[in-house]
Length: 100
Image (cartoon, rainbow, N blue to C red; front, side, top):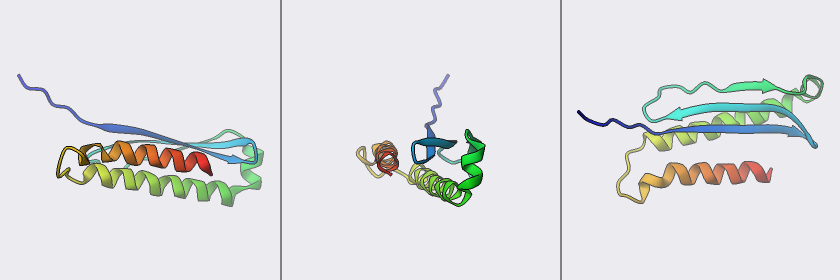
C-alpha cells in the first residue's frame, strides 16, 4: 500500500463596482493541470451590463493571477522553503486583490 497526495488551491475573486458586488470568479488549481476553468457568476446583471469592460478587466486579471499560481505549482521546489511559495503567492495575490 502507498499514499499518493496532491495539492490544489481553490482561488476566488470578487468584482465590485462602487460598493456593489457584481461578479464572482472561481477556479481550482492543481499541479500538472494543463488548463484551469474559471467560472463566472454575475450577481448584479444591471450593474454588469453598465460596466462590462471593468468587470471583464477584473476577470482577465483574475485569470492572470490564476495562471501565476498554476505556474508556481508546476515549478519544482529546489528546497523546503520553495515548497511553500504557492501558498505565499496565494496570500500575496489575495492581499493585492483586497487592496483594489
